[in-house]
Amino acid sequence: MNWNPVIISFITGALVGAIFRIARLPVPAPDSLAGLMGIVGIFVGYMLLKALGI
Image 1 (cartoon, rainbow, N blue to C red):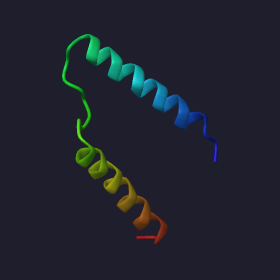
Image 2 (cartoon, one colour; image 1 turned 90 degrees about the vertical axis):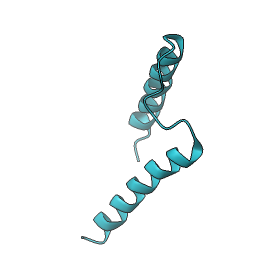
Image 3 (cartoon, helix red, strand yellow; image 1 turned 45 degrees about the horizontal axis):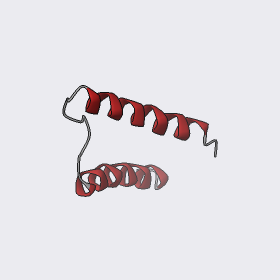
């Protein structure tokens, strides 16, 4: 697996999050672990069904 896109995406997201914080805007992502895990669950479910050919 090529980790470059993952690292670049993480850094870009961190910079955007910092900009939103500096601008005192609401974060455009879940602000709790439960919300974040919901997004991860959606991705995992999608990838699981894709792997099963559904």
